[in-house]
Image (cartoon, rainbow over all chains, first blue to last red; front, side, top):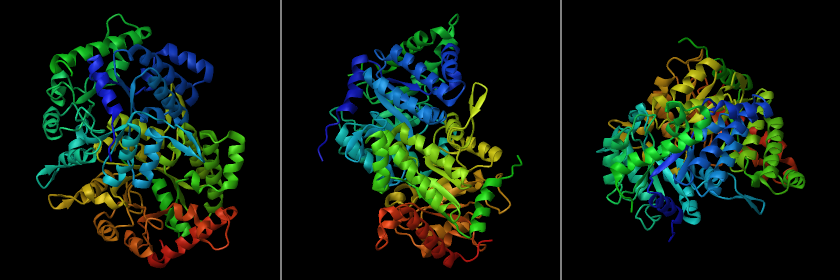
Length: 314
Length: 314
C-alpha cells in the first residue's frame, strides 16, 4: 500500500501556517451557551431537544467564526451532542459541516470502538461516505476521529483503510487525562505499561500511513495532566502525532505540554474546550455578549503561551 | 448508598418468564433490509439518508413485532445508525422507544467511554434524562448501555449513579468476541490478564448495585468465541451478569455459551444479530417477504438450542 496522507499533513501545515498547535474543543453544555442565544432558540422551539440543539449550533457557529482564521482545528465532543438526542446529533453534523466550510480541520471526539465489521460502520459514519443502494451520502465526515483500541487490530483496520484512501486520521486513546486513567493504563505488562503497549500499537498501525513530516495518520491521545508520560511517549513514539487534552480547565499548562513537541516544534495539537468556550466568564467587565470576542482572545493567549515553550514550528 | 436494581432484575425476571436468555441484535445494515421495504422508503424520500433511516426503522419495527413476546431484549448497535447520519440516529431513538413500548428491555450497544465530566453527558444521553433549562427530556433513554472501561473508575462512576438512581445497567467490555481481542486483553498484568483485571473492576464497580439475584447493574461483555475464558470468568465474577456476543454468525454455538450460566440457569444473555435479522436467507423456499416470520422461527430455534444446555432458568 502506498498512500499519501495529505490531510494529516494539512493539519500540520495549518499548524505551521498559523504557528498555532492548538485545537478548540466544542463541548457545548447548554449551561455554557449565553442566555441571549438560548432565549432566542427557546422562543422559536420551546425548552425542548430541538431548542437546545438550535442553541448549541448557534453558539458553535459564532465560536467558529471567531476562531477559524487563527485556530487550525476544532474538536466537537460527541457526548455533548448525544445528550440532546438526535436533534443534538444533527447539530453535531451541522457543526462539522460549518467548520469544514471555514477551512478548519475537524476532529470528532467520539472514542468509538467495536469489532471489525461494526468498526467499519463507525469508520464510514465518521470519516467515510455511506452507500445508499448505489447513491453516496456523507453521514458526519470529519477529518479525524478519536478511537479506543481495547479491541485490538481488527477494531482499527477498517479505519486505517479509510485513512489511507480518504486522507483521514485517527487518534487512539493511549494515556488519558483523567485522575483514574492509571487504574488500567499504568499497569505493567511484562516491562511495559498498558499505555506504552497501546502506544507501540499506534506506531505499528501507522507504519504504512506516514506523511512527509514523518508522522502517520494514526495519532494518540495523551493527557497534558501527566507531563512525565507525555515526555516519555514523545521519545518512544516518533511517528505518532499527539492530541493532548487537559490544558486549561483540567489543570495542564504550557510547561506541561512542551514535551509533546519535537525539535521542529511539531508533533502535537493541544486542546482547550471550556477555557475557550467560557473565556468571557474570567474577564473582568466582560458580559456574555462578549463570548466570541473573549474566546478569540483566549485562543490567542493560549497560542502565545504555547509558542513560548515550543518555539518556531517548521 | 442503598439502591434497588429493579430493571437488572427485570431483565432476569423477563428471561425467567420467557425461559429465554437471549437478546436480538438490531444491527440493520441497509443490505439486510428487504427490497420491498427499501423500495417504499426510497420512493418516499429518495436514496438519501432520510430514505435509508426510514427503511431501518420499518425493518426494526417489524422485527420487534415478531419477537417481543418471545425474546426479552433487543440490542441496537449504534454504529449502524450513525452510518446513516443524524437521520439514522433518529431511527435509533425511535427504535428504542418502539421496543420499550412493547415491553422489551433495550441495551444500546454504543461502547461509550470518556473522562468523568464527559461520561456524565453520555450517561445522561443514553440512560438518563436531559435537563433543558429546567425542563426535562429523554434523549435516547435505553435500559442499558455497553461501555469501555479503558479510562478507569472516573469514566464509569457517572454511570453507576444513574444505574442506582434510575434502575439502569451497563455492560463493560471485558473479553470481546473478535479475533484480535487478545492483543491487549490477553496480556498479563502480574498474574492476571488485562481482561481479568477489567472483570475484577466490574465486580468492584457493581458492589453496591446488586439486585436480589446477586447480580449487579454492572455487567460484562464476554464473547462466545472464547468459551474457555467465558467459563473462567463465570467462576471468578459471581456478581457480574454477562452479555455474550458471538453466537451464530460469529461462530459460537450453544456448547460455547453454556459456561456463561450459573447453576440456576441465569447469569447471561446471549446475542444474535445477523442470525435473526437475516434468518429468511437460510430457509429453503423463503423469500424476503418472510423475514419477520423467519426471524421469529430463528429466535425460537436459538432459544431452544440454548435451553438444551442451560436447563430451567430460575
